[in-house]
Amino acid sequence: YIYFFSSKANKETFMKNPIKYICQPKPKPPVPVKIAIVGPPKSGKTTVARKFASVYGLMRLSIGDAIRLVINNQPESALGLQLKWHLHKGLTVPDELAIQALDVALMDRVCMSTGVVIDGYPLTRKQVKLLESARIIPVKIFELEMDAKEVFRRALSDKESTNRPSYPVHDSSQILAIKNSCYKQHIDAIRTYYKKEHQNWCMVDATQSKWWIWNKVLQEVQVVVKEIQIYLERIKEGKAASIADLCITPEELQGRLGEFGQYCPVSLAEKGELVDCSSTASLQFAAEFRGHYYKMASQEELEKFLSRPEVYVPPLAPYPLPPPDMLPKRLTAAEVKALFPKSAEMQGYCPVTYLDGKQRYEALVPGNIEYSVMYQDKVYVFETEEKLLKFMRLPEKYWNLKLPRKLPPKKEPILLTALPMAGYLEQAIATSLIKALNEVGCLKPKLPFLSVKRTALLFVACHLK
Image (tube, rainbow, N blue to C red):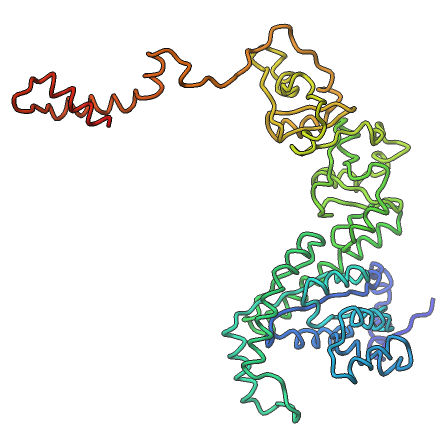
């Protein structure tokens, strides 16, 4: 074999002990990373982005850089002409055109081979939506967190610096206040979206030193890169691999779901339970195998699937997923009412409570319409959310029960005025009467020229009034 070295010193080191360097493990496959850094003005976004670009060779790309790149390299293209038209008119480039320019800039050789740091973007929920539609999803988004007071302090410090550029800089207190206000207005919605859909949001305290911030960002990126490298290696070897940190869009997930849809194949194979994982958009317990995606119920099921995936998917899977019309479907209260005149099975009693209670008379508990399920064209209502989920997992166990001949009497409300006199007094004024009698016993009132009995009656009457 012939080996090439980057310098003469490396060649001489290799010549001294070649076996040491030949027998080392193979290097991990290079992974082009795509990260984004957002934050208020003066938080250090550009400083961190430039550090990544200089140390690791990533391309730093702001939305302005992307627009300039298209105008300089493709001035006669349709996109370039549209961008120039807006700029010559003194208008702001629309978000739709800006995203197209960013998409073109990401085709650069450095972005495709090494990676890119998107500086200060996205800033609004609309921009996030356009990025999703263009399939531009950073593997990690860092938010540099800093309050307004620190923003103005840094701006004042920059004005006193001797390294200011010769051209005017838009960093007056009024402009910074507007920028910071706009940022605070939109960042909560952006953060919530990425945390929920991709779990790729990372908060960084921007008031720390630049070295601390750099180390924090670098550690997070290294973890993501390692996860992606492990994913690529396992897929290349034909094994199952976790897809938790790959920022897969919901549309891509839906298009590549395996034979079990969003039901957990491990729970179905080992327990015969239908565990629906569609209630959460998180891919924390999801994996890819043979080009298809599978979602698991928990970390335990995910580890079992990653170790022996072929056992849980066809043709070795012990149980196939039932057809769609044989799967239980949860209903809202409005959907149940819309099915009128169809009534609930078992006369509205909870089947799970009845069977788990060994079909005793005491286990006949009425269900709540808020916890309803449609199964095999029949409606079932349940006592609690827990009982509903139990039925959803094992519908075959609970669906075909028979009620006993003797049922509990219906609990109908009784009007207070329909009670006999003693019952009416007990339910209506018993508490007030007891209080009045206690007061009489404690105070022992005596009015002049009236007997004790007459005085006590007048006191009780006034007390009740």
